[in-house]
Image (cartoon, rainbow, N blue to C red; front, side, top):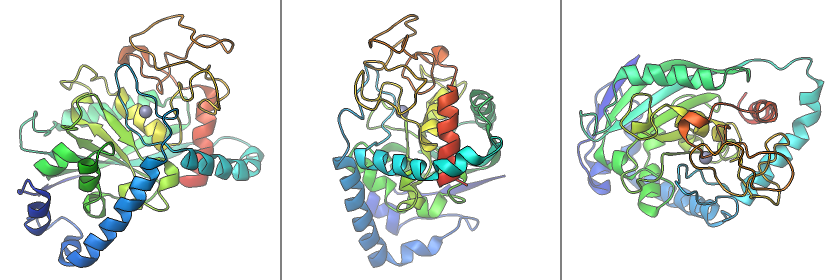
Length: 324
Ligand SMILES: [Zn+2]
């Protein structure tokens, strides 16, 4: 299943007032209520800025090669921990861990019909689904492809991000109201250009944010990272990593050697993100070697190949609380 939509203007104002689209695209009326839309955008923009303003530097360390701009805040971290603790009794009572299957929709945002413009071939989406399911093999979590929507908009393609004001403005302009599909159990994979920051490959919205920002929920990934893409990191594990955040996981290097770490007992602490594939690296006393092979580290793509049992359990807990 696929559909195509076209937005020709490149400026934010032109984009909103002059959009053109085919008849199959939903929610055209949202642009007709411009005053309410702008008011709502204003409110959401303020709230998102509050979230980002509370982001702790320790929680979102910059990597030697920054890969992921998923916004964490201590507040959101506390909210998730409390919710999981409250639900823990029920989870422990389960006789066995059920399997979870998520519907997946791709939104391919492209500036034009060329590959460099973001128009990825269907074959790469098929390959990405295979890589995604392979990455989660053994965790009880799997993903079922449901369809692709192709969206022509150089503004969305170039600007959407959470790491800067212009990117937030694009993200909050109504994009999600139009194109996001499903509910909290539905994974939306948005492919974008990240033209304003060539070091970031993706970000995700934590599950705790769904209650207030359902229209933004999903992961946003640089299109060149799909298997067979043109990025240096093009084996598809960027999507695996961002889905880990979408299911509540933190980076393995969270908090360095101190603090709460990533809240997972079987991922040894590490002082900083790994780069390359430094086998035997051990940057923190105790706990064992750094988890450089873990999908939630920043080590080289070919080096990352696993989640731990503790991470699988954490994802199950998160799903039962937020995504089931
Ligand atoms: Zn990340």
